[in-house]
Length: 224
Image 1: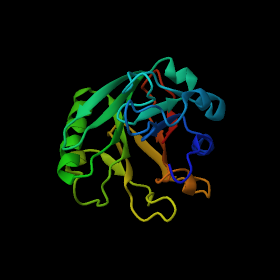
Image 2 (image 1 turned 90 degrees about the vertical axis):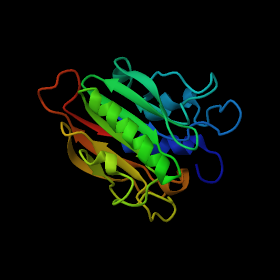
Image 3 (image 1 turned 60 degrees about the vertical axis):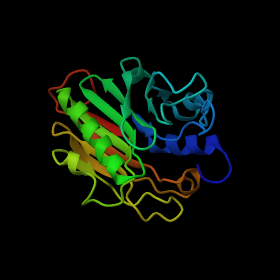
């Protein structure tokens, strides 16, 4: 978040995206028991979405290592989420949500490139071993396209545009990586005056299509 603590401002930006699935980072305060910075009691009324159920960092937290996933209520009923510990020189973790034939992995990678490489290698291996369509999304903390992403060579990696820092975006830290069974219809950066003050990152978004022969999930979904 940027400036004064104002969760209603963040939720207004989320609502404006019109997404089916929203991946969020830094939803908890950093210190102590890491209580929620984005109050869960406000989320559904403001956005129409709900947090996908998962074991959080503490009873007061909304996320796991600061991350959570918001989904439409009808999708939340079918979602299962597990936590993934990640290697590196600082504590990091990811969330993996299974939803029908799709797995969505939400990540916030480390500050050191050696850690990011190890974290992506573990996530890509776990996702590929599941035999399902999957995507990785979040803050990759990587400003280069030519380094640090070697583990994703078999995936389609999308960085729609500069998203950080939000007030004057210069770097493409935020990405979406898609397995071969998923098709990208469109992607972009959600750049509005409110989004530029609601967070230190602008949201990225993507319209993604699943193969028509995969039952149990809409053939096209907007994910962030």
